[in-house]
Amino acid sequence: MQPVTYTFGPFRLDTAAYQLSRNNLVLAVPPKVIDLLALLVSQPSALVTKDAILARLWPDVAVTDNALTQVVSELRQALGDDAAAPRYVQTVPRRGYRFVADVERCAAVTSGSHAIEPTHRRTIAIADFQNVNGDRDMAWLAAGIGETLSNDLRTLPDLSVIDRTGLPEVARRGGLDGARAASLDWMVVGGYQRAGERLRLTARVIDVQSGEAIAQAKADGPVADAFAVQDTLVRQLLIHLQVPVSEAAAARIGARETSSIEAYRALTEGRLKLESLDLSLVPDAIRDFDRALTLDPRYALAYAGLADARFWMYEASRTRNKPDHDELRLAIGHARRAVELDPGLGDAHASLALFLMAAGEQREADEAGRRAVALEPNDWRHRFRLGVAAWGTERLTCLATVERQYPEFAHTYFSEAMVHVARGHLPAAAAVLELGLSRQTSSRTGPSRYPGSGLHWLLGLTRWAGGDRAGAHEQLGLELTSRGTVLYAAEYSMNAYDGLGFLALEERRFTDADAMFERALAAYPDHARSLIGRAMACRGQQESTRATALMEHADRAIRELDANGRRTEAATARAYWLVASGDPDGACATLFAMIEAAPPGTAGWNLPVEPWLVPLRDTPACRAVLARLAERAG
Image (cartoon, rainbow, N blue to C red; front, side, top):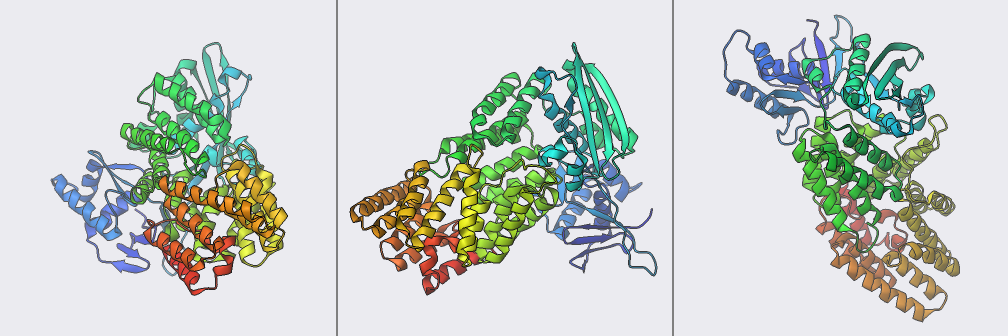
């Protein structure tokens, strides 16, 4: 067998030298550990059964499972891995083990040469299948086929499968320019048609660079057996592509969450509504997922979809003083039920990470996110949700992977910039935001599926903090052009009106400031920051009575925030209230106490660009607040 070198994370396994190293430092590990690791990394993501391991490590020798358990334990110790939340070696109960990290495989260095030639894992995606005869009743299947084929191909370690929701719109329609922009090697395009109660599928695999078809297949059968028809299509394509299929992968191809085609349809229709990011469609999506669960009460994917929809309802309310915590509790409950029904469902673990982070359960959120990535390391959505649940360097590491896989995903850049802002690295934050916006507007890939709500707002505040008021005004104005029913659009429009109000305050344009804060309050009438800002505009217009009433209203709003458990938001608003009331020392003390009391994570991340904090930034007390914030984001 030709010697091979594998790299993963900070580790390097050289099978020629029989060495495992971490950051170029050779580790002292027993030979059996090297043997086991070499076997696992040679087939990443695939299940390696206990029998296969015993046969490789102890050929012709009878040993008990205890010997294998000991070697696995030693391997985990060498890698610094955790069996409960594995980053490298995952236990598959009663079956065997799976290596779950991304692996790069290289040929061994030849004598006299230092060149290493990495093997290439083909990157593949499924375009939405075309509804050949325009059957409206079967329109939903265009996305459903793509999702099913992606799940089947994801079982193969030699392929890196890009989720259909991670493709630019042009690529999803089969456009080669969009596929090239998405760095795909292969793309599956095809169509379907129904004739009576029969369903026919046709597909081709296109080499994206050459544009040539390198494999094709067709399959047909009863509409009621649509699952089997799709699996037949996948198997034919793999035969033509000559992609190795392990026994474990072959067993997973065709494994189904539900036997009900109608439940599958309801799930797909609900997911399509969520993909639109249109909040007005979320109630209909909830009804779709409920219908799927009525048809199949044990449909784990439907519970995961329902959890996502409920979380969206919560997110739409998060800027209110009293968010809809019942929706968040429902989201967490549905995600836990999905995990209970299918512990191997990465979608459910990833969603649970996001929901638990929103509920302040940081440790469990991190664990859920890592489990999702371990289960399905190729899925960019899982890495994004782990990144959002994490903070500091871990967040940036996760999001760098997402950026490589799906450069048009706007929320990646916002979440990265948050860390840079918290660290006080404002030029880095601005550069990330500018990159995200440039990729949003790229004409090569078509319109983004995920509009970048908040990017212009945060870039505006970052520019202002760097002394560029004109740039701030431009960016805040651009944020207002994205208003609509898309998730987060209303929230960041309100933030943009506040930003423009603060700019007007600083320039002593009090009437303009009053108008901007008024518009912000039209959307969120009890938002404390807007109320205080408007009070300051009233003072500038010599309207002391109205200013006092607004400050009293803000005080009540802050108390309501605190009573509803939103202590970080309450403390931040209270600090601004104290600044407006002439107590800057009290404001800084409040902020420092808030940061110290908050669990690890994002609390106070935006303080370095908050306009109302500008007058205090050079004071020792404020510098101490920002230093502590930066330390937490390290």
